[in-house]
Image 1 (tube, helix red, strand yellow):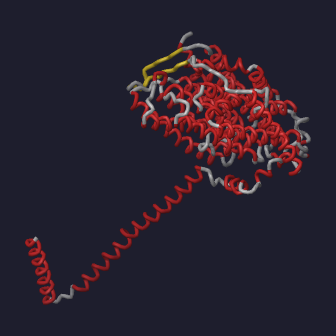
Image 2 (cartoon, one colour; image 1 turned 180 degrees about the vertical axis):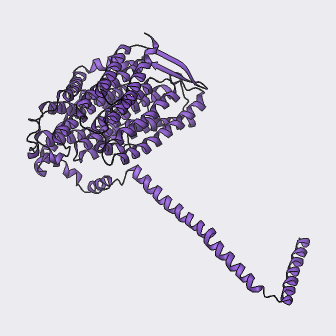
Image 3 (cartoon, one colour; image 1 turned 30 degrees about the horizontal axis):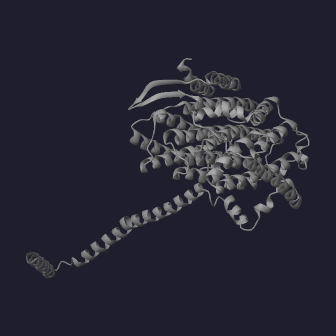
Length: 604
């Protein structure tokens, strides 16, 4: 196969996006043709191994693209999910504002994402990676009235993490003298460990991990819904975790039990628990899903951080599973929003009979994300559980607690939206249109398929990533039994909570308002722990201090010194009386002072 085909997944969507900005008609058709064509190309390229090289910037920085099993798998995932979300968007976005910008940003994003995955040069990868920052900003900015503020927040948070990655890449270049990713083997000395941490920050920030996550819940409210399905819910996970695996396995070659490995596992465990605890108390469909998008990336980081083949495969399997069910869950939220005009859980309820297809798709993907057997999420989580337990019981407990809280929050969400008492305003609600339903049905079906035939998914798509490393699953009957028990406890917890608190949407309120937790939740909802808000406060304090110093300097130079000069000149003026005798006395005194100083100088 011609290596020039590697350019097509990048060029086609980029050109189509630019074309849509220039013309105002046929944007939906152009978008579907572009995403459909690159999906066909990705299918044709799958299982191929190709390289493409072109002189670019000099100094060893060439336009190198490389297709191998891992990048081919990620490219196929990106193009397949993009096509489905684009089909959905053609119906969902009808009547919305800024349609040309929306479709253009969508397509350009796909082109840049494809380039980032195929790039075999760190600078080239960074070129595509940073391009995504621009389209991400535009995607959010065309949303609601507060969208520009959210876009700015995202730009700063992701921009800072990307700056860290740039510095890390610079250190790698200094240590190895090359930017070619496939040939890198960075020593894990002090500088090497620093480079890993800096590049890791860029990878996990793109994936949506804590503490670089706080813009995502805001974007869930402000940005167009397909944005949440395709970017935080899908592409960013694929790109961030792809890069994390590359730097962990290929560039730096971490070992189990190392300090860096433990650091990754701690970040993963903390992200799982804290994000899902925030998801549990949300009263908005999209915002609840956004916190789960953050929490689930914690499982991926935890699995990869074990540096065990089973954990890495589990993290990758969870990556693709998450991209599937999280994508579909956001699409169900869009379906509900399109038909009812709201995603406020207090204004929804009883939609099962009105929107049965959406409800079934929700149930399948909610069961998948909660780790219910035999759906796909169950098997990827079990692989991560086993590897995490081998590295430390505390990591396994954190992952299991995350599963309990995930199941509890989705029981609450499903009860509130589909099975609770129907709001009178939704009596005339109907099922969504077929173009919106088809992507949800396809993705839900794949979740079932990857669950029932999980060995096929692992062996066909994921095991080639390990490049011959021995792979042994760490799951056991005991671990599976514990998972099932946790899920049963979550169901009982929801039933009792719904009865005690009076409704499904309030089923977890006793956790929200529990002693100690209540205060923590209140502070969290007021953004007390938001690094961005903390940064803004620090900047505000620093700017006030600098402003005070600036005014003080101005007062010294423009006020005090001027007044002092006027005062001295006035005093001198008053001494100038025209009395020659007085002038002679002042002259003699001055000469005497000079002589005294001269004699002192000679004496020393």
